[in-house]
Image (cartoon, rainbow, N blue to C red; front, side, top):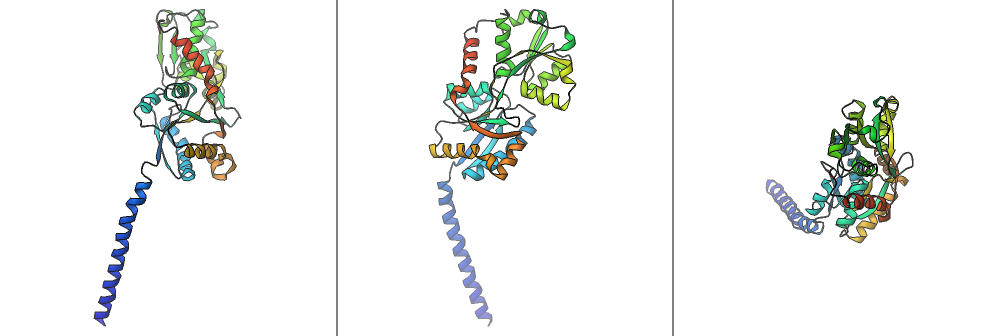
Length: 302
């Protein structure tokens, strides 16, 4: 009896070992077929980095499930970093603001896939130039000798628009015209810098300003909007042009149909969005013209 038990145990062990060997042989082959089937997607640091990662993590998981491709996220430390990441081939795509999307499309051949639509039904944003209401600043002439806070040099709403606005108002040399100008790194920081008196003039995005006002209505009674930029796409998902066409098409369809599924709807709400809409390179014409305008006057002191 003992011999029989040992015999059957031995056979079971051999059978188990054989199955394990089959798995060991098969898994690497399957893995080889799926090698490199992952996408690294960048996200710009408009909000607190941890909040921004949390907002987009669920979307990355949803895309991974729908596409059958692992989608990983990376938060770029600053707005202009997307160019560096694309050049080093570490980034397959990104959720970009209008300025970086324009550069990515024109210089790196990225394909704009979809624009994010906010809960208010709008997909565009504007740049604001802000001052305190009690500052006495009404015109650009009133700004002479004052301090200015921008967001990032790779930002339409937080720098490019304000730079062009000042130039068209006769400011050729910001170093001599203003007492000081610097970059805050985020739109909210720029708004609070003006609000707290750390800067006399600030450049910011309307959506961030409105979000802060909703949280604290007193802000709109303390700040005045001196100028507004043209409306441009606020957030656009762009992808590398060498991505497989079938994957690109599937990704586009997944994004455009998110609002039609329960899970997709929840994720959109987390992004404070209602849906995605088709994007096109022509959406960025106005930004491209602004960039050309600035580059055409590169000899001016900034």
